[in-house]
Amino acid sequence: MQARKVVVAIPDRQERARLCTLVERMPEFSVIASAGDLMNTYNAVEDKLPKAVLIADVLADLPEFEVMRGLFSTLDIRWLVVATPNRPAVRPNFLNRGSDLFAVSAEASEADIARQLLSLTRTALFPRPPAKPPVPHPRHAALRSPGRETPASQRPAPPPPQTLARHPPAPGSRGPVILIGSSTGGVDALLTVLSGFPPDCPPTLIVQHTGFGFGESLAGLLDRQCRARVHLATGAGRLAPGVVTIGAGIKAHLVIDPDHAAGFRLEQGDPVSGHVPSVDMLFRSAAKLGGRISAALLTGMGRDGAEGLLALRRAGATTMAQDEATSVVYGMPRAAADLGAAQDILPLHRIGPALLRSTAGAGAPRQETIR
Image (cartoon, one colour):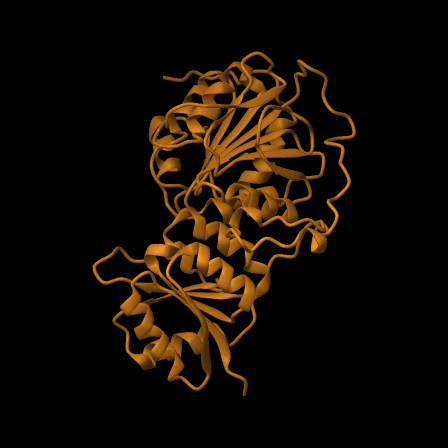
């Protein structure tokens, strides 16, 4: 039987060498590359296409890893997270049955690590199929390291320009708008929510916390998996049906344009609620639109978005938050629930349909008393 290829991604050089030696002693596996950071791990996985990656928990906890994992999900690559002693355990919601992510202690015996590797590479997963054909355009440029660019002569031609929507709204349109905020666990959550959006969904703005430079790759991942068009916010633009604009991995806040309610823009500024871009900034900027807004706050650490969601509710918007059972980290949604900012607390699979239903009657503020 051909040995299964493994990449070892551990920052500590001695620990990386130890695990490489340990895996090489297993007849079923072969170490084809090693790395000490996420960028080199990405490059190794992209080039070598291993069956499994041993990755340190300190790397798996970085927001960029969530995007990277999503990008490689269609390649059926498994991730074995090596837990550092005396560090909090890997978040249990990441380790659900059928997941591509598993955990093992750094102090585990060779037999235990071998058993885990054999178990996680034994069967095939069933990755989410793309919602639309891939576009022949390099979407992962933000993750590539200098010197690894494809030569210009070998690059595919860029796709032809696409129309944002068949019937773009006129300036000052009174149509509904969807807003979403998410952080830790947000990549999978956004895939779940957006996968049910139709090609002509209401204009949607999203803020997702992730590392700088990973936004383009995240937008590309979501675009492939969703019927609506998803693109990264790079400047000012207009709100258009069928277009999802995401602020992620950028050094500016994504906000509704204060001068043109039918548009959005990027606003330079300090971190708000600890983040740039900030969910609170997006939500607060949209409060003037009142009942046109339907907003959801998804899984994430901290409180970003809770105060903004409350401002939206007070303005007459429809507001909801993800429940604890389906959240990877119940921080941001909990803060919203504690403030009374969310009219509904919903499991993840119900949020997308709820947002779409609420936009059917958007425009008039909901009549309720808010303390």
